[in-house]
Amino acid sequence: MTSVPSLWLETCADDLTPRASLREDIKVDVAVVGAGLTGLWTAYHLVANAPALRVVVVDREIAGWGASGRNGGWCSSLFAAPWARIQNQHGRTGAQALRRALERTVDDVGHWCDRHQVDAHFVKGGTLTLARGAAQAERVRREVVVDREYAGDETRWLDSTEARQRLAASNVDGAMFSPHCAAIQPARLARGLARVVESLGVIVYERTPAIAIENRTVATPSGRITADVVVQATEGYTTTLPGRRRMLAPVWSLIVATEPLSADLWAELGWASRETVTDGRHVIIYAQRTADDRIVFGGRGAPYRFGSGTDGVVGHARTFRHLDAALREMFPAVRDARITDRWGGVLGVPRDWMPSVGFDRVAGYAWAGGYVGDGVGCSALAGKTLAELILELDTPDTRLPWVGHQWRQWEREPLRWLGIHGVGILLSAADRVEARTGRRSRFAEMAERLAQRS
Image (tube, rainbow, N blue to C red; front, side):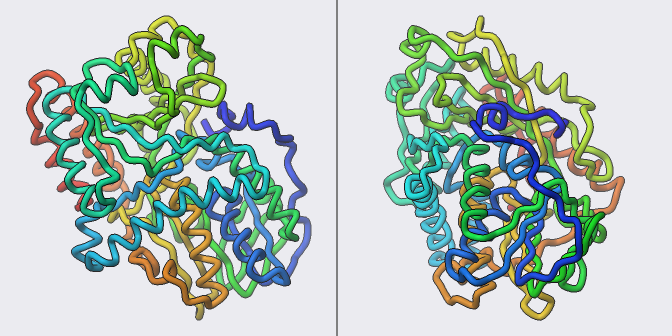
């Protein structure tokens, strides 16, 4: 599936011809494995702070080919682990500091794009979480209360009239609004980052897969990189590295895009501020209005691959049909719109649902990832933080709660496959029950306990 380009990559106005591959053994100061947003942000902040550093980035495909060029285009302050759990483990001050850092990062990405003239279609319109039905309304209202504890009164509940004035979706009983999210064209951001880091002296080797990371070296099929520091920025593809198969589970997310819609349709839909959009269901969906007036609509639900595989198409046709149906059910005005693009990719899920960024100075090994689909904003903060850790800079970001977090390993197969599929089945069942009855389903609570997310 990852051989299929995304709409984002196809329309990023960039030459996708691969850069040169590594063809010899080299020695550098920092070797970054993964030319996605995490790796590229890390390289950027390293050389921006220390221009004399010799930094290289390697990727098995091209810059931005993975999740960084395939996601839903949300640059947000969302974080996978619940804020209450972070507060319990790190205190209220720590939880609020992380939330504020992520909020600041959204603005930082926009300012960076302006400064470096990278047109990533960045528009900070915020996020609408629609409440569609009684069960969702109860849950989203609770989310508003919780979110306000960490974001203040910027997070608001909109009644049904206010929500529908912003967006003409079906069956809307209200919505949560947060201003801390921007719609973005993620491939334009990733490809722009690659160009900028190259202009600062970083070498990006494409079509250069890392086949092993060990003892401050990165082994590739055509050369070995020796470095003082190796940065693992492989996110959902971490399982392809020896010894790391159980570190992060690669979970699929798929997306469809409509043709550009007419001005009359947009007048009916609203969506004037290009808010990112989701709703209160358990099996996540996400959407945005693109700069060229399409709807990009994605969601989870594609089968997890036994053994944490990151390739294949089994189950995708069925998931795409469900996405198509969900898009037209949510937005009846586009029921006749043509779907022009379908794509997908994997995201990295830690066993404890806690994203992490860290640096083991003794081993010369740094890492970041486990964003569970909220990686555009998290990766920008992670890259900045990794650079500061490597350069021994003591900053507020290097003291945030996710720094140094150690992931618990996933279970071995077949338990991993059974558990992930079990959670998916329970969440889908919960959505069906709530849509039918309007009451909260206990299946969701069972899924939470099985996932051990809280």
